[in-house]
Image (tube, helix red, strand yellow):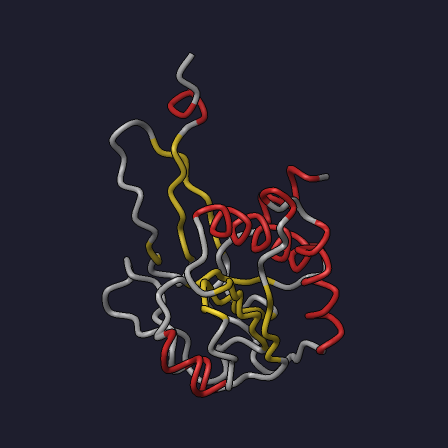
Length: 187
Protein backbone atom coordinates (compact mmCIF):
# COMPACT_ATOMS: atom_id res chain seq x y z
CA UNK A 1 0.00 0.00 0.00
CA UNK A 2 2.72 2.53 0.89
CA UNK A 3 4.57 1.72 -2.36
CA UNK A 4 1.47 2.55 -4.41
CA UNK A 5 0.93 5.75 -2.43
CA UNK A 6 4.52 6.89 -2.97
CA UNK A 7 4.30 6.02 -6.66
CA UNK A 8 1.11 8.12 -7.05
CA UNK A 9 2.58 11.01 -5.04
CA UNK A 10 4.05 13.14 -7.82
CA UNK A 11 4.73 16.88 -8.07
CA UNK A 12 1.57 18.08 -9.77
CA UNK A 13 1.62 21.56 -11.27
CA UNK A 14 -1.80 21.72 -12.95
CA UNK A 15 -5.03 21.33 -11.02
CA UNK A 16 -8.79 21.50 -11.42
CA UNK A 17 -9.12 24.91 -9.79
CA UNK A 18 -12.93 24.59 -9.59
CA UNK A 19 -12.64 21.87 -6.94
CA UNK A 20 -12.13 23.44 -3.53
CA UNK A 21 -10.32 22.10 -0.48
CA UNK A 22 -11.78 22.81 2.95
CA UNK A 23 -9.91 24.33 5.84
CA UNK A 24 -10.65 21.12 7.76
CA UNK A 25 -8.92 19.04 5.07
CA UNK A 26 -5.87 21.30 5.33
CA UNK A 27 -5.94 20.92 9.13
CA UNK A 28 -6.14 17.12 8.74
CA UNK A 29 -3.09 17.18 6.43
CA UNK A 30 -1.11 19.35 8.86
CA UNK A 31 -2.06 16.90 11.61
CA UNK A 32 -0.11 14.25 9.67
CA UNK A 33 2.92 16.56 9.79
CA UNK A 34 2.34 17.10 13.52
CA UNK A 35 2.45 13.35 14.12
CA UNK A 36 5.63 12.89 12.04
CA UNK A 37 9.20 12.77 13.28
CA UNK A 38 10.89 15.97 14.42
CA UNK A 39 14.61 16.41 15.17
CA UNK A 40 15.08 16.32 18.96
CA UNK A 41 11.26 16.47 19.03
CA UNK A 42 11.55 20.28 18.94
CA UNK A 43 8.44 20.63 16.73
CA UNK A 44 9.66 24.00 15.43
CA UNK A 45 7.46 24.15 12.34
CA UNK A 46 4.30 26.20 12.03
CA UNK A 47 1.80 26.26 9.16
CA UNK A 48 -0.25 28.96 7.46
CA UNK A 49 -3.37 27.66 5.72
CA UNK A 50 -4.95 29.21 2.63
CA UNK A 51 -8.14 27.35 1.70
CA UNK A 52 -8.99 29.15 -1.55
CA UNK A 53 -7.24 29.73 -4.89
CA UNK A 54 -5.42 32.84 -3.71
CA UNK A 55 -3.84 34.97 -6.43
CA UNK A 56 -1.67 36.70 -3.82
CA UNK A 57 0.01 33.40 -2.96
CA UNK A 58 0.16 32.34 -6.62
CA UNK A 59 1.88 35.60 -7.60
CA UNK A 60 4.74 34.83 -5.21
CA UNK A 61 5.59 31.41 -6.69
CA UNK A 62 7.87 30.28 -9.51
CA UNK A 63 6.91 27.03 -11.21
CA UNK A 64 8.90 24.25 -12.92
CA UNK A 65 12.40 25.56 -13.58
CA UNK A 66 13.11 22.92 -16.25
CA UNK A 67 10.06 23.96 -18.30
CA UNK A 68 11.64 27.09 -19.79
CA UNK A 69 8.63 28.26 -21.81
CA UNK A 70 6.03 27.77 -19.07
CA UNK A 71 5.19 30.41 -16.47
CA UNK A 72 3.06 28.12 -14.37
CA UNK A 73 -0.53 26.99 -14.38
CA UNK A 74 -3.09 29.13 -16.20
CA UNK A 75 -6.28 30.40 -14.63
CA UNK A 76 -8.47 27.32 -14.11
CA UNK A 77 -5.39 25.11 -13.53
CA UNK A 78 -4.09 26.85 -10.43
CA UNK A 79 -4.02 25.35 -6.94
CA UNK A 80 -7.20 25.33 -4.88
CA UNK A 81 -5.31 25.76 -1.60
CA UNK A 82 -1.88 26.22 -0.06
CA UNK A 83 -0.03 25.24 3.08
CA UNK A 84 2.81 27.63 3.87
CA UNK A 85 5.51 25.94 5.96
CA UNK A 86 7.11 28.26 8.51
CA UNK A 87 10.19 27.96 10.69
CA UNK A 88 11.45 30.20 13.47
CA UNK A 89 13.74 33.04 12.37
CA UNK A 90 17.31 31.79 11.84
CA UNK A 91 16.18 28.17 11.86
CA UNK A 92 18.77 25.39 11.89
CA UNK A 93 19.42 22.64 9.37
CA UNK A 94 17.45 20.31 11.63
CA UNK A 95 14.35 22.44 11.10
CA UNK A 96 14.96 22.05 7.35
CA UNK A 97 14.99 18.27 7.80
CA UNK A 98 11.71 18.52 9.70
CA UNK A 99 10.21 20.56 6.85
CA UNK A 100 11.05 17.81 4.36
CA UNK A 101 9.54 15.15 6.57
CA UNK A 102 6.42 17.25 7.20
CA UNK A 103 5.92 18.03 3.50
CA UNK A 104 6.23 14.36 2.55
CA UNK A 105 3.67 13.39 5.19
CA UNK A 106 1.28 16.11 3.98
CA UNK A 107 1.63 15.08 0.33
CA UNK A 108 1.19 11.38 1.07
CA UNK A 109 -1.98 12.24 3.00
CA UNK A 110 -3.16 14.43 0.13
CA UNK A 111 -2.52 11.63 -2.36
CA UNK A 112 -4.48 9.17 -0.24
CA UNK A 113 -7.60 11.37 -0.46
CA UNK A 114 -7.32 12.08 -4.20
CA UNK A 115 -5.44 15.38 -4.06
CA UNK A 116 -2.07 16.23 -5.48
CA UNK A 117 0.48 18.87 -4.68
CA UNK A 118 3.79 20.46 -5.35
CA UNK A 119 6.40 21.65 -2.87
CA UNK A 120 7.72 25.04 -3.95
CA UNK A 121 10.96 26.53 -2.66
CA UNK A 122 11.18 29.24 -5.32
CA UNK A 123 9.06 31.75 -3.44
CA UNK A 124 9.16 35.54 -3.08
CA UNK A 125 9.14 35.09 0.68
CA UNK A 126 9.22 38.75 1.65
CA UNK A 127 6.28 39.61 -0.61
CA UNK A 128 4.27 36.58 0.51
CA UNK A 129 4.92 37.27 4.19
CA UNK A 130 3.61 40.81 3.75
CA UNK A 131 0.60 39.88 1.58
CA UNK A 132 -0.58 37.13 3.95
CA UNK A 133 0.24 39.02 7.16
CA UNK A 134 2.46 36.24 8.47
CA UNK A 135 4.08 37.31 11.78
CA UNK A 136 7.68 38.47 11.36
CA UNK A 137 9.05 36.01 13.94
CA UNK A 138 8.32 33.18 11.46
CA UNK A 139 10.26 32.58 8.25
CA UNK A 140 8.68 31.05 5.15
CA UNK A 141 10.53 27.84 4.31
CA UNK A 142 8.35 26.24 1.63
CA UNK A 143 4.89 26.44 0.09
CA UNK A 144 2.81 23.37 -0.70
CA UNK A 145 0.34 23.99 -3.53
CA UNK A 146 -2.64 21.61 -3.41
CA UNK A 147 -5.56 20.64 -5.60
CA UNK A 148 -7.20 17.91 -7.60
CA UNK A 149 -4.59 16.97 -10.24
CA UNK A 150 -5.42 17.92 -13.83
CA UNK A 151 -2.40 16.36 -15.48
CA UNK A 152 -0.85 12.96 -16.01
CA UNK A 153 2.61 12.39 -14.56
CA UNK A 154 4.75 9.57 -15.94
CA UNK A 155 7.88 8.13 -14.31
CA UNK A 156 10.67 7.25 -16.75
CA UNK A 157 13.56 5.07 -15.54
CA UNK A 158 16.96 6.31 -16.65
CA UNK A 159 20.45 4.88 -16.46
CA UNK A 160 23.67 6.41 -15.21
CA UNK A 161 24.28 9.76 -16.89
CA UNK A 162 20.69 10.02 -18.12
CA UNK A 163 19.02 13.41 -18.26
CA UNK A 164 17.15 14.07 -14.99
CA UNK A 165 15.24 17.13 -16.24
CA UNK A 166 11.47 16.64 -16.23
CA UNK A 167 9.60 17.58 -19.40
CA UNK A 168 6.22 17.56 -21.11
CA UNK A 169 5.59 15.46 -24.19
CA UNK A 170 3.48 16.42 -27.22
CA UNK A 171 0.33 15.16 -25.45
CA UNK A 172 0.99 17.36 -22.41
CA UNK A 173 1.98 14.47 -20.13
CA UNK A 174 4.56 15.44 -17.52
CA UNK A 175 7.56 13.04 -17.53
CA UNK A 176 9.80 12.64 -14.50
CA UNK A 177 13.08 10.76 -15.07
CA UNK A 178 14.16 8.62 -12.11
CA UNK A 179 17.53 6.89 -11.80
CA UNK A 180 17.48 3.08 -11.75
CA UNK A 181 17.58 1.49 -8.30
CA UNK A 182 20.88 -0.30 -9.02
CA UNK A 183 22.53 3.11 -9.58
CA UNK A 184 21.37 4.39 -6.20
CA UNK A 185 22.55 1.43 -4.14
CA UNK A 186 26.32 1.48 -3.97
CA UNK A 187 27.06 -1.91 -2.36
